[in-house]
Length: 223
Image 1 (cartoon, rainbow, N blue to C red):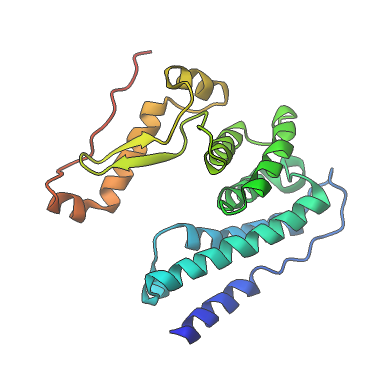
Image 2: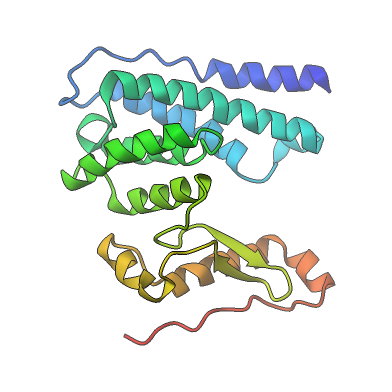
């Protein structure tokens, strides 16, 4: 088992040694964009449920693997940030910007780093050089990771008794849809219903064993 863990980590590290091209921040950097694209593949393995060869790992080893992925990525992303600032559309394209943001989202053990990226990202959003929806998700992540309430309701938890997604602690819930609309997000109720349905499908056998026959959806607001 130890040999398997070491092998998986070595395979991971082989994908985490990008060489950053020394180009101007104002010009598209394909090497950087490709590095982000390759890194996010590993990020998504760690961020999702265990599959394939990872099913052989016991829970503690799987958590160790996840921590190694997110921790190593955080160090690389920080080096990218120190060299280029926040990598917006002009530097890495829309896909690259999304890849960078997505991996920052998973650096929950480094909220100071997330907050630093958030501050820089805000300026790029104002320049139309980063996705305001991504910015909203990162705001919520940073707020919750620093003991505050979220703003946009993007981070959820689930009621086990009825299978329903609900927002984690949320500031001024009565006006959340106004804030969501301002950054291009759908109604929070529609978002929660999507999360609820996906959660039920992923845990359907367990849900049905507990007598839950389907997801409990929120009522959508009338336009």
